[in-house]
Length: 241
Figure 1 (cartoon, rainbow, N blue to C red):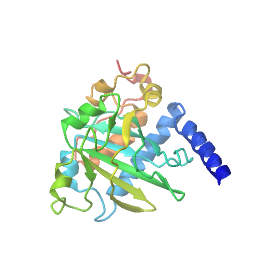
Figure 2 (figure 1 turned 180 degrees about the vertical axis):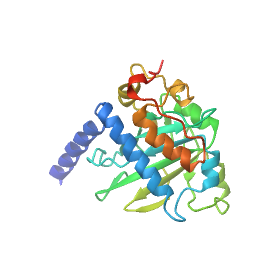
Figure 3 (figure 1 turned 30 degrees about the vertical axis):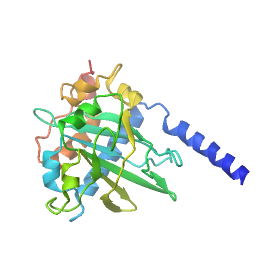
Figure 4 (figure 1 turned 135 degrees about the vertical axis):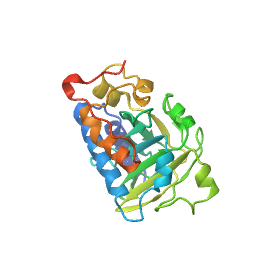
């Protein structure tokens, strides 16, 4: 029994180190592509997508794709993703995030899970600009409703500052992420935008959207029926101040 506990701790530590490894530009691009694909697949599912009226009022949308290399802490829960926010003219270039802790269950019985977070107010954006925040503690959260309309959802869901969703084994539904900690992925942001990456400028739409990030911003823009911005080719990319 003691040997099993020790082995479990060793495996958990190894996965933690793997999950928190530094990101490079190639990692960033893969994460963007995975996030865009996940978001498009979920929104294209008949009567199982995030309600359009909720997306129409969303201030920010985050996508946390499942890590295909098992880079989650067993029992500790860890994932990497991106968030884009609604700017004056269009959705912003994405900022890279990490999500950890809580009773999220990123890896349950060997199955991996994708997550989407819908931020519904300016307070959520302000928390995104801080070093880190706890879902359900610093911001109220609820499992988001699914379907064409949010009219049937409860008052708790409609007044929550974040609506959270998950997709596991093809099933998409609202899920509680209470207790999970969200914070910037500094290495991912630096790999994409240079050092240091100024998160506030990026999410305010003051930084040009890198060409590699265009696919995610375009997917979110299409789903929210917003203007689709043009991405900037690599040779002319604007670095965050």
